Image (cartoon, rainbow, N blue to C red):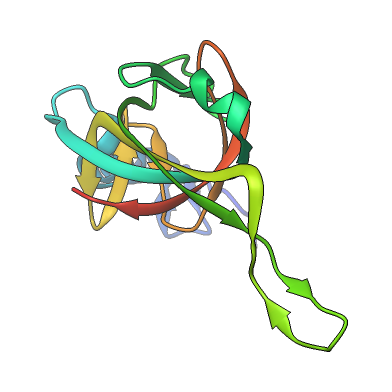
Length: 165
């Protein structure tokens, strides 16, 4: 049994040209599906919405608090686009606490003098698609994920504590 017979059919059943046309149709259908469904968050035609989220930077020294200012642009080291992932809208501090075991065997969380947990409320433009939040269409934000961020004055690690809108 020959693979291609005298009439140019594979295994005597289907024409090579028919097979090529079928492959082209399948590839075009897959491309259309990707364009319509999978890549909608990167499409420039999809409108963006304001997204507000909060990040926590634990254990910031008191002399470093001045490095964060309302209105500063925040960028991410793991976002290659070069676009800001938000603007600082609000700054809040809480005393930094660390677990300590005492001589008598008790355990407590005393305040550490001169250090604070810093909370930044960031505002940016992005998309909300299927319950997922994308800042600038490409940078996905997830609660409880650790990120490296930087401003004009400081580079640090933070955790996203909540998505407010």
